Length: 226
Image (cartoon, rainbow, N blue to C red; front, side, top):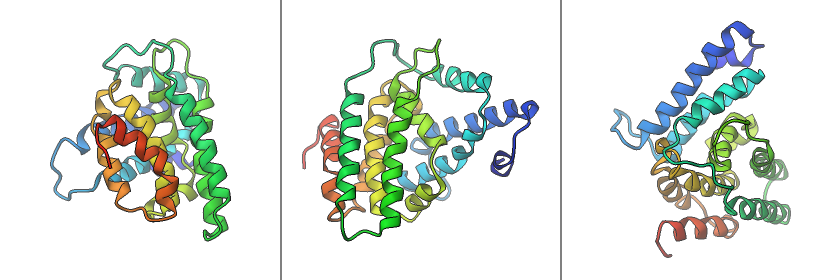
């Protein structure tokens, strides 16, 4: 299926490809933390598998399918999300911009990798600025969670696979939004806490300092202290 998504997609098969991808994505989110697997994966490895399944969805660009994507995901909500977007999004935008600035000041990091990490942070900001589909009550958090997975660059995804600490810091900022979305979409429940534990154990200085805001947000919301 991924090879099909890498080519120009004919209109007549777009619907089938979309539905298959959406089912794989939602099924993976819903089942990974809840059921035993023959070859257990860490939450981080599980998320990378989901990313592998969904990155090609950005190739499906017709207006009708864009609307369908968010209408399908809209049905997965468990609460009414029609209220105004939480101020958390504004705070997250500010903190991502601060993160980009702090990344620029790092001197002991490969410039090419640093550029990819900064672009990864920018891609979250870009997804947050994307207009949501009219006619759905989907919150901005859920919109961000699923949209970002389809827009990951190949370079950033490669850094995540290699567990580059800069990419993991950016992922922690994404997990802050994921945590906000958990109460709104049942398939996401439990992911933020498990990912926080997985990622925190992989970070060392100076990356722990760059991740501090996200870690503080996640610990506070989970009712834990360092």
